[in-house]
Length: 175
Image 1 (tube, helix red, strand yellow):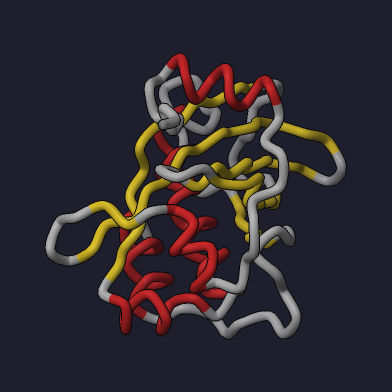
Image 2 (tube, helix red, strand yellow):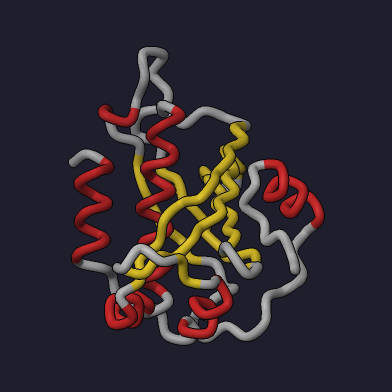
């Protein structure tokens, strides 16, 4: 099954919510490297990491019990920006986890960290700035989404994250 099909499956048939999981808790998605994930050099292609992250973010929403809430509100998530750092290669047959967590939010976006871990070895880390849109096409303020998902105020966002968010022009501009 391609990662696109896997994403369609986890989006249309989400896994069950994890009782007690809060918006700032870690969601874990376990995967195994398949032949279709590999590039010419026989390690996971950089674009496939992004597809895997899509699956893990869908699982985070499922774990939070957010899928039905978002459908009722007629909101859906989109990626505004992302960046990756690679430390080690994943190769055919490797089992690994993607640990996804919300770092916080501003008026515009929700910031997530997605860490790929094989055993206890970090493999790659992605930062994602996600927005939510209404079916009408309008942007939904991130605090409204966080409130729907049980979050109060955002924790203090790390300086390095905000430097990145400003550099890719997704951070709230104030005012």
